Length: 355
Image (cartoon, rainbow, N blue to C red; front, side):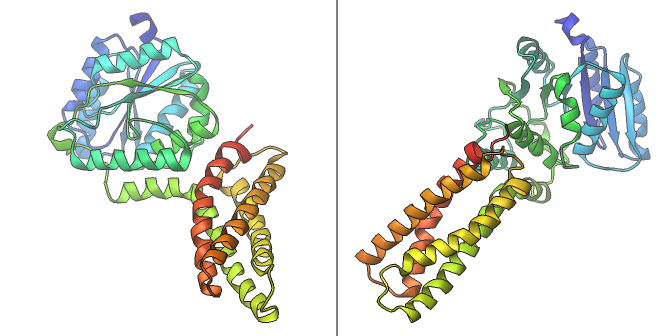
């Protein structure tokens, strides 16, 4: 293991740390790590002496931001440094508050040695009593959103212990985000680029109710969930366009052809064509940012199936429960809401999947 740790750079992003940072660095050095990159994320003059003490340990390189730029920027600064100065070196990211036990760090490095093409994630057990409520709730909620919105099954969405192969570092520097949302964006980008990952169970350590963490539950969670729900925003917008056009269409057609048996089908077709053109372009260019030459064919195959299902089910409901224009629109909202959930999954995994 000692020989393998020589080939791994440890990255520690830190902002206004306490003495626990020195414990982290000391433990890493004593465990055989020879290259530790410490990033002072603009902690200020009051914390400079502590960073300087940490830099005295053998193998420690100190990088400094003149002002606080966020954990995401600190990580990208270190990744860029490794690309320039540590060519071919894989990295493991570690929090500086002593929440990652050195044995768990070594376990992640060992798993990386076994699977050099995987990103290795240290996964905590959030069911334990000692986990602070804000961390437990945040992880449960984010894990559920990840599973539905992104198709990612992951135990610990907030983990800062990640072993990353050298081949992926350049991609990591290109990921958007400057603060805690960056780590979420990393998981999303791994999904988009089909970068495999594996989780390694690690100790669940929270010190002093996690008071040393600079994660702002309100502000940073909003950034994280905004990033995730951006995947669904285009589909929601197109659904609203579709619904409004259907309502206008059914009103006009009912006025022009009161006894028209095809009113619902015609209104559905016009609304779906207009909304689908908007949705396709937004999904391909802004949301999924993927899809090959056949994506438009796949997309409209899905549209045809959705159109048939929507028109058929709305017509069935209108037959079983006679209603006016507003009632039929409500039927369509219910049907298309269910179809939206199914359509989103298919678009993500088949239509716009990166080739």
